[in-house]
Image (cartoon, rainbow, N blue to C red; front, top):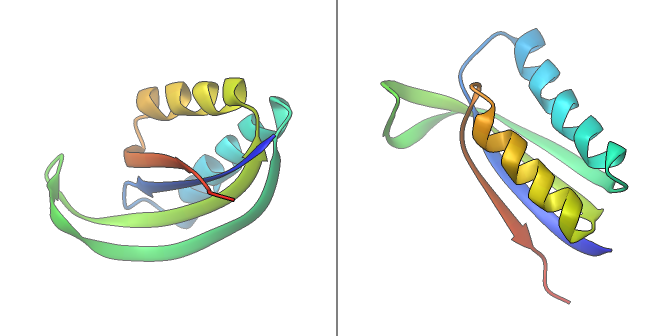
Length: 94
């Protein structure tokens, strides 16, 4: 398994809805054989430019370990999730 980081921006919604999105992705990682090490909620921040007519978003950084198939599935699900504005998955170097 390799170490990864995923940074994603959630639409500015209520705390319960945001926590549900975060829990959904953590559960997806663990269900595919990964291990979530740390989840940092950076909170609501102003975006550098408008995305889908929104000026703010909730930033979340997750550090995890998984294999390539789990990362591919996470990327696929993030692309089709309406609450996610942008996401980026990075493999951490040794």
